[in-house]
Amino acid sequence: MTRSFRFRLAVRFALAMLAGLCALSLLTYVMLREVLDRQLDASLLNVASIQAASVTDAPSGEMRFHEWELSPAEAAQVRDLNRYAQIWNADGESLLRTRYLTTDLPLDTAALHGALAGELTWSEARLEAIPVRSLYYPLGRLGHLHAPHVLQVAAPLLARNQMLHMALLLLAAITLLISGGTFLGGWWLAARAVRPVHEIIDHAQAIEAGTLQRRIGAYADSHEYQRLVQVRNNMPDRLDPAFEAQRRFTADASHELRSPLTALRGEIELALRRPRSDTEYRQVLDSAREEVERLSRITEDLLTLARSDAGVLSPRRGPVQPVLLARELAPRLQAVAPDKGVVITVTGGDDVVLAADPDLLRRLLWNLGSNAVKFSPPAGAVTLAVRREGDAVLLEVADQGPGIPAGERGRIFERFYQADPARSTAAGSGTGLGLAIARVIAELHGAAIEAVEAPGGGALFRVLFPTPA
Image 1 (tube, rainbow, N blue to C red):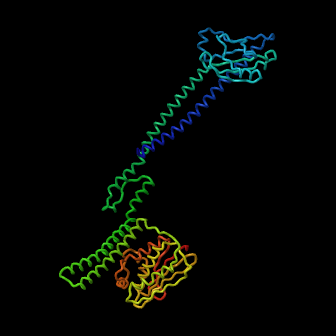
Image 2 (cartoon, rainbow, N blue to C red):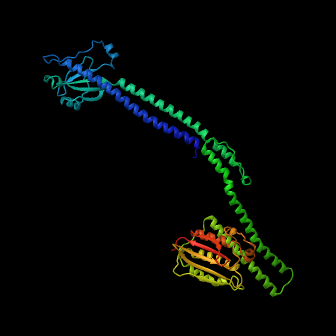
Image 3 (cartoon, rainbow, N blue to C red):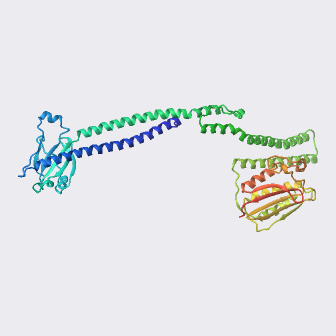
């Protein structure tokens, strides 16, 4: 069951206070008991010293107690203050006891033997259902005649126990009262603490798809809530470029898909207006096949970019020789524009090895190479170079086309972006996604891609892989 932050905060405050008060109460109870026991022990020792001195003051060795002359009714009234005394011999036989004792005091033989050895020993027991604390005092300290005798002085514990019980009840009441007050205080404090959150939530729920530019105007009286409101209010400014790019991408994709579909539909409708010869039908079908192939390329490119955006496009790395891939692609690149007579040159050593996905790396080289062929002039040259550069591997694709203006070199990797008119015209049937996919593949491998001016004119694309295999 999900509980509110307000309830949990109040409960935690109350539990923390309860734990602290329980510890403090336990410490207070232990200390109070220790103080009372010390006072009682001091009283017993004082009475035992007086009684021992009076018992052993006869030269003949006769023992007798000096006691108050109290009536039974008076003795009952001062029962909690009364001290009982009894003398034992070494065999545990009673030799003398005070007049108010109707039965022997409970004897602790271990304490008796300790007193016979000359030590003061203490013990607790029950006398006729009344708890008592006893001191065993060796009378041998006052003369050799009483060496085998031990004086036991006992005091009732009823008053001490009642005081401890009352103190325990008082501490429990204080603990519960303060813990309950802490819960209520925490509940009130949590209500004030979360009130701005509810206001922020109410304002945020009113923001819909068409009102993303609305700002939260909830009052926040703390630095943390002010930051929360500020972050939310600044969020549209950070997300707008992404939304705009997504809208532009959707519009461009729709346009690119609509163009071949419109051409395909027009050619088919034109062919169906009247009977045609086999040659004319074949021409229509060939043209339709070209448009379908273009649609397939666009769809495949869009799927690749969508998988990249979703984070499911991951390279299967393995040792790859990029020079061999470039040599494999060179004949296919010449077929991109067979009428131009572009010369494809591949340079680099077979010893350069990369840890890369061979299919993705082949597609990167194809996109950059086919782009270079399309923008190359007739009888131009396209160079695919692979070489080591320090600890990295550098792939370069250069053409002799019109080049790329400096202000547009950072944007040509955007989806469906068209550069200057010269390159746009030369692009022919391109989808406008090849360079965007090349950047995605490079980034998946941790590589950096850039477009610069070639030394002899034209465009030069550089892909720097940080670590070879």
